[in-house]
Length: 451
Ligand code: 5AD
Ligand code: SF4
Image (cartoon, rainbow, N blue to C red; front, side):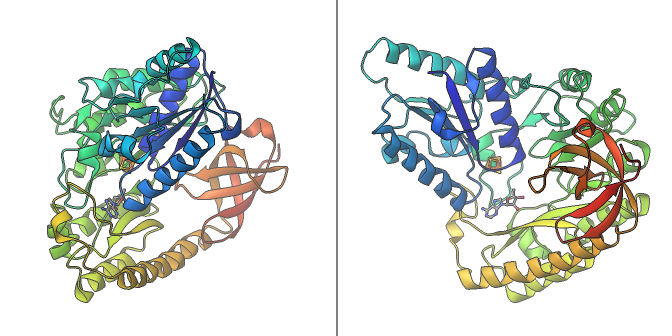
């Protein structure tokens, strides 16, 4: 009864939460399996950001519930954002569910499983469904364990939880609660320990990372706590690359922009959510910046790092988005020339301030707007990749590529995916790769110094 399979939906934050749960379970004697069929326990770590994400996980849970008829001892748990959002009502939809674990209770999973398995082994009645979704002070400090299963080339580190922004479309403040930062020294210790075990790259995670600890830690020499943290991580020996996601344009000040010049390990790549290019839609979304301000930040970054790579998030079809509003988004999107983007069709979320406006933009209009942006993105991403053909790029080799035996996969500092023939012993190393050809989504190349 100790084989656990964890399936993760949603963002990197969720990936990281799943990893921490896996590590905690491992420490308690559970084994983490990569196939659902062999598992005694299936945990779905879920996302609520769009309705479709919830439907996917509910569909999956329904399918597993059906399997439970043949395998009655199988334990099924739903964790994370949808557990938090739907709570008890999930049990109404899925009566065979065993665990519902909220976003502040991930660390309680091992105890809940222990108890459940003990009572099943006692051949007692099937235990009641556990619904554990309360808020818990200090829960942000519980997402720090990492699996001890060999060096992790690139690791996520959660630096905070929750969000105090009030974007009108967004369910995250409801699912993740108020903003809570982890102490800076604990984050630095965690990254030092990762580096000691061979990690070369860290991605700092938070709902709004650049807001990190603005209330808990003072600014020093006009540097925000987030910038102070970046400096400390930059000083950790063994760490070669630093990334973070996601920042908010508000609070993206010169102290942070200058980091792209000062801190050599900070990669010249930024995920910078724009959401819309129309000022009236930004206002309706309660995003407290103008498109001019957003573009000004990008311009400043490009002065400091002309080669910076920028990706974004866009929502099309927000209530009230007229053709003119969309045109403003389209033209800003094209002018900025994003290297990567996630384009989402608006989805009404319960409890948000935009919920009462409903979903007045038709599916067809959303689809058409989505496609227009995807076409622009395809062109700009391909052009950026093609500009790299013939250059030499520093690539962190992360592992084997799916295609071909001796093919390996890595990323440039700009987060471009590179496929290269190499040797297994180079996994985890920074290697120079001569780029030979490019597609929209990846680059191919050859090692500059043969192994
Ligand atoms: N509908 C569509 N997309 C959304 N996002 C957040 N909420 C919604 C919603 N209700 C998008 C935003 C955010 C990304 C993680 O998901 O673009 O940056
Ligand atoms: Fe989804 Fe947002 Fe939760 Fe991440 S934080 S899992 S994107 S709802």
